Every structure is written in C-alpha cells, then in structure tokens.
Image (cartoon, rainbow, N blue to C red; front, side, top):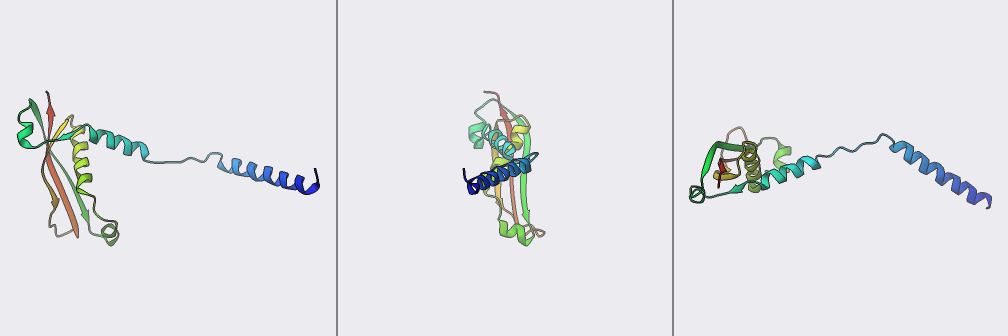
Length: 130
C-alpha cells in the first residue's frame, strides 16, 4: 500500500471516529407519539345527527367546545385550523369524557372583537350503550 492510500485510509478512519464520538449522547425528541395517540383517540368517536343518536340507548356527557383565536400577524399568516381539525378536537374531548358519539351543534367563524380570526366549534358528547 502506498503512502497516499494509507493517509486516505487513516483520514477516513479518523473522520468516522469523530462522527461516531460526536453523536454519542445525541437524542431526538419528537411529538410523533402524541400525534398518533391524538389521531387514534379521535377515530374512536363517531359524529351523529341528532335524529340518528336518539334512536340509540345513550348517556349524555355534556357539552364540548374548542376555539381558535388569531390576533398576531404571525398567527394570521400561519392560518386557521380547518373545520376538520376542530371536529377532531371535539372528538378527543368526547373520548376523554368516556364518550363514543358526538353531535356537532355549531362550528365556524364567529365575530370576536379581540381576534382577527376566531373559530368556534361546540357539540354534545354521548356514550352509546348499544
């Protein structure tokens, strides 16, 4: 092996060693598990029309509500959540109360003086026994 090959091999070995040593103790933090749990919880609750729900043996669990307010330029540029996202939040709240059914009573934009963009969704949470 000539001298140039030995120098290249030694340089490569040194570089790999430094990369491995530099990554020792490196950790990554994500919220992927929270997102997956959130999606899973939301999928266990179904949305019903009032006429559909009253045909089932059910237990009312109360009102659920979520809001979004944007009053800074950054929040306005980032944009408001979709109606579907607000529905998912209501589903999660329903599930946290032990429910499996939701009636959306209202959802959409509302005029609120302190917010440039204000969305509000509310619904009624239920546990269907049958």
